[in-house]
Image 1: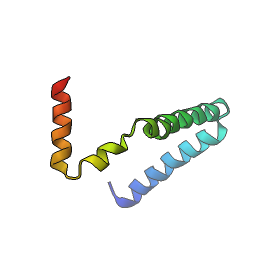
Image 2 (image 1 turned 90 degrees about the vertical axis):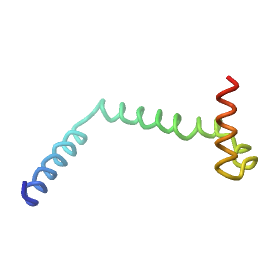
Image 3 (image 1 turned 90 degrees about the horizontal axis):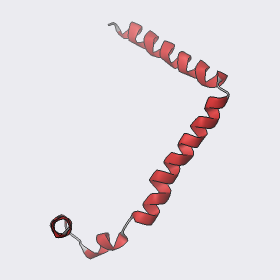
Image 4 (image 1 turned 30 degrees about the vertical axis):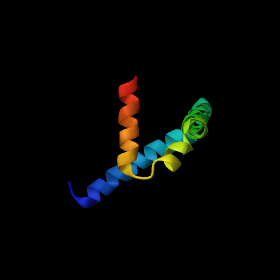
Length: 75
């Protein structure tokens, strides 16, 4: 494909999605729900599950990897 044809295809795809999102009614609400769920999963849960003692206790990568491998073997 030539560069001009590729750009035309990309513009057509962009216009199709832009028009579709503009004409949405229920879909906008559903997308908002999806983004709120992603926020909760990625940001809020990370705050509760991220262990900061791991970073302060083990300084080098080898110490960290030994800790992880020993924790996996114990279980």
